[in-house]
Length: 230
Image (cartoon, rainbow, N blue to C red; front, side):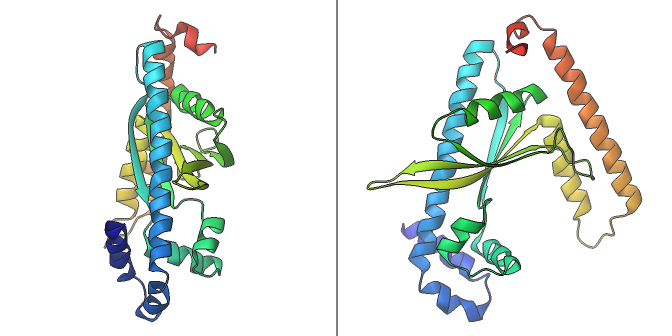
């Protein structure tokens, strides 16, 4: 808990000075909230690790290439609450912000994205809050990923508490494109042009074509023949 409070104090320094005193009075509440979100991330990571192990035994390969997690800072959360015109309280934050805890799951093939998402959502302690399929319906800039907001319980000493986590599932190619697109589009002291946006969209289409071809090749493998029809 001491570490959590120290981290929260660091975050307070990024918030407007006039708000620090009011927030400091509830520092323990904010620290506890962030600790709960970290626990929720661990719960989801464990579920995906178990699924990855199961599928590796069943199909002799790992559908998950990697996982990344992140927790929004208090400063970022405060800015988001202000945009929504909502008070900066623990109760309002938990009710209105869905992406404080986030996990990105990098999959080998497009089919793995949906296979893992379906397997997770079938678990009886997972509740789907929201789903956005940017693979089936890419964003105008070419971004592709499957987004899920889920509620998962964390088991504390004296209570079970539901917490929301944002999950992004995407292929290696989708993650490669998204990471570089972000670096190029938001590079400091540089004007991002319309021609660059068109080139990036073209690259996104090439990335999707690569995923499609690799998926087709995967379907030709003998070991996965039974998996495809399931």
